[in-house]
Image (cartoon, rainbow, N blue to C red):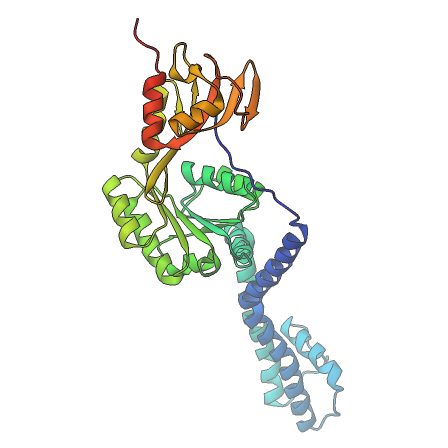
Length: 363
């Protein structure tokens, strides 16, 4: 059975991607500065301020004044256990300074080194920080909660449409992360029910949220949290229970709710009778569907032209295929023959009637 894809033109996104990358680099650098900034500032304060203090104490001891630009170098030498002069000072406060600087240097450098080693060996933490930095630059994007089998397919479809996507998943496999990387989709690792995680995914600036985890309760909790954070957010939910689906749509202002049975039923039913029926669409409280079928010998469909069938049965034949040739929006004068492949759009009750009447009569 053929698959269906909706593809949007991508347009020129090079400059947008470059701009986003630059913003992501800036935000990632800002995050690194928040991580290492205090240690760097403290180190600079000790080297410069400590140098100035050492110079004043040196003058107080009756020694000649040391040029200010040499004082930070003196402090650095003390930190690495290399005295700035060969003669040990006689004054207790200078001796204390000599012994104190190596301890202060060890404390500051050791703290920074520990943070660096932690980030170096925990590559996942750095990758997560980068993904969050990239996601923070997105605007008017779609958030997909749950990057499992369904979520990954949804992400593929959205990226093929040219839509920008951010994924959320508590735990993910390496191969999934690699595929998302190839699709340029940042992944936020965490519990989507958390306001912090949704904020990292940019829910306040997103156009839509698709909640497609395998847990109805999780999807419901995320919907409630996301709706509270962004009242204008378009929400699409995947649920298993039909009754639950209707309640979510009614009470939580969710634009689209699809249950597993609703999605599967037309596919299974159509396959059983040799046709392909799309998911029903509702326009002004009327259900419409599209069907692909092969006209059977003796079918009422093989009794006239495209224009006659459309007018008589209130349907729209959007495609006609015969002998390997396909015509979209066929001419009204085209005659329909047994063996033709037709794609028909009509009210859902009319689609069911067409399916029944096109079935071959039992011999």
